[in-house]
Image (cartoon, rainbow, N blue to C red; front, side, top):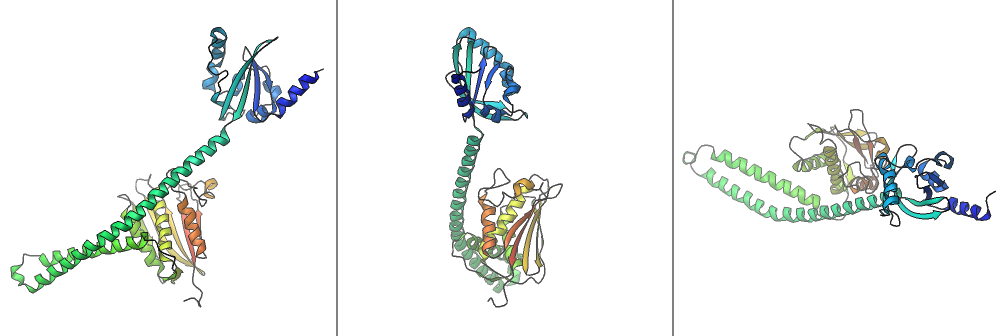
Length: 371
């Protein structure tokens, strides 16, 4: 019959939150509390008398007996009384991090070693989450700084571009008045091309300024196809060579009542994400389409990447959730919020099995009474 002291000790061990394990000089398990059972998936009766290597990864288990014998012969401590982060092996073979503190006791049955084990998975997950949040916040700060820089550059470049266009127009008018024979061949054609390119650069700068400038949300009726076209053109400016964006914009779409800048930001985000998802393909291909379904106007952005794991698809629209290691999670979360604030939604078809993901931006058509 166990004594009261033994029963009390057993009760304390079994109610402990951390795992407690006792081994002898031959590394045989003498005690394995309830927390250890939960931690490693073994019942105490299955491991008592076995070498403690049963709960160790093979790369460490192969040397453990040598470590014990080296300590017994030399008295040099490496972990006893210190504690360190190590790895444990579950019954199912999975390996996970634990913190191990080891003490020793001399008993009538010989020297024994007591290990206290704390599961570190929750802490490691929290640390990884914190590191990811910090990285995301730093990237958001850089993106914000780039927005400010983009607005400043667009403002500064707009003035010399306007001046360049005026000078080109003046030269073109002067050349037109001059005798054609006195001009080198093709001068007027070259000037006309230069003027068109300057106008094109000015239009790009204007779109960039409109895109990055901060302003209060203002909703108005806009041509959805034109809005999508501009957003795709902006995205192409920063895309890698070889990327292909095909467009299939439906004819005679009704206008939508939206904040154009906010919706353009959503479209740019979706197209950029699609290009990144397909970047491992030799010929990244993104298909952008618009259509009308009942009383909803829909934009679909389909890539030719590997698709999204259905188990992670539900996490995409959470703040700082992303299927990409380097992605900025808030993009999709904010994009869905913008869509829902407009009375619509942003959904995803995960794809997979040779088909890329497809994101769909849904926006309601304005009621007849709306201006």
